[in-house]
Structure formats: structure tokens, C-alpha cells
Length: 85
Image (cartoon, rainbow, N blue to C red; front, side, top):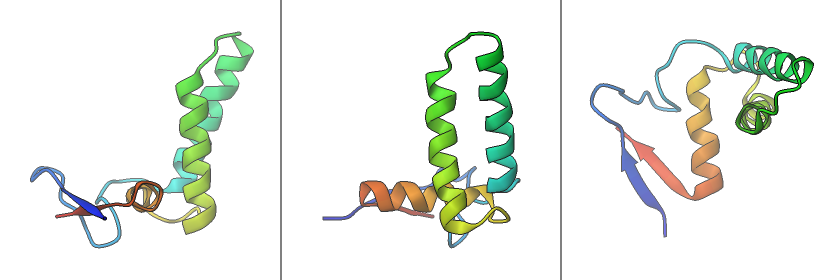
């Protein structure tokens, strides 16, 4: 059974994802820099590595120019939950 979650009024949804600035390609580039810096400094950043994997998957599916809000679609697909405005 699919559940639905409504967006907070201050964070409206726009059709295929959250209306947020930036692209998935930029997010992947930023997260790669963070994980590279952490590796250089011998600091384990498990959350950043997990986030990088997740954002890379979304980027591969939707394309590098897709808005960052497309991440919501990947969460929906993985969890069976639909985000609605």
C-alpha cells in the first residue's frame, strides 16, 4: 500500500520533485569534493559517502542537469511513499 506525505507549506512541491535550486550534477561534484577532502585528511565521513552514492544514483537516472528536487522521486521509488503538495 502506497503512503503519501504532504510537503510543508514553506517547501512547496513542483510536479516531479521539490522546487529547490541547483542540479544533481552540481551536488555530485560537491559531494565528491567533500569525500576527497575527508579522505585526504584521514577523516571517515560515512554520511557523505552514503549521500554521494544516493545522489549519484539519482544523477544517473535523471541526468546531471536535472534539478536537485528529483531526489524526491528516488526516495519515492525506494520507499513506496508518494510526496504530494
